[in-house]
Image (cartoon, rainbow, N blue to C red):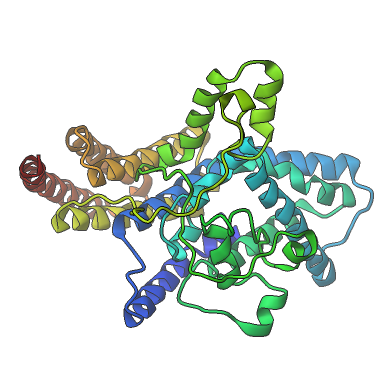
Length: 410
């Protein structure tokens, strides 16, 4: 069983999101949009699933350094946990800061900032590639002699702490804000207003920002998102969009030296012959959030299908150690396909209807093979039969409705 703090906390995430929705309703704050929230969670789902493979690399290298190059053999106890918790956040600060200040690294972190909302679901909007650009920032902890198991525990708790600060429900928190990261401090971090960009990088503590000159108090309400919105609900594209832009811009840059500068300078940098650095601009008065509209019946279809996907994903992550590599790859690909399929429905892509039929069939087959030893076969086959039939019927009826709406809007 996977005992990662992040995986164990998955049910708590959704309980807290439900509480936040209720609180926002009392505050008469719109707070959530279904398409945005599902995209946020989809990015988190893909990040966790891809992390099954990527963390083998990052934790593996950390362990090799710890076993062969560490100066000390630091015991694992309460006091060393506290020291490591502080030092981990110090390393996190620099990893996070460089993810904003180095264009190549920003490609791994931009995913988390690309939502134009700010709520607890945004905390789950995590990148699938960021680990490649940040895992080496923690190598000094291995050289000092901190046990890899303790590091995994501390990193999980650090990430859990950052979940609750992604909310507009909580205002400023007085004395607590002097040394800890809070919703107010982190709202600044997610703002795309020029004065807020590249500020408040701390994970748990805010003191590192105050020490190293990157702190900014929350003043006017931030406008959330990135300076060039991704304008898509597709979590795969959200993960790749910045790299695709980099590829196109690298084609225009002459000379190896300038190409290296482009990769490692701040996002927005270009050589002078292409116009030079593109500084963030003030928010345009005509700015509107990206949105798409589908019939409410389609929203309900996605919502219910998504609940089933989360059950499958949770089961997969909790039982990850019991699967062979072929099963891990197969289920991971199905989960990724499902998240892309939902984005196609939200965006009313021409391909969504036939491939969603295929996805439902494959989803049923995978569920059957995963659960046949747990649930009696008669009950399982009957349930999957009903699920498949209802899904097909719902898709067929609502595809006709969506087509009529699309035609009427032309």
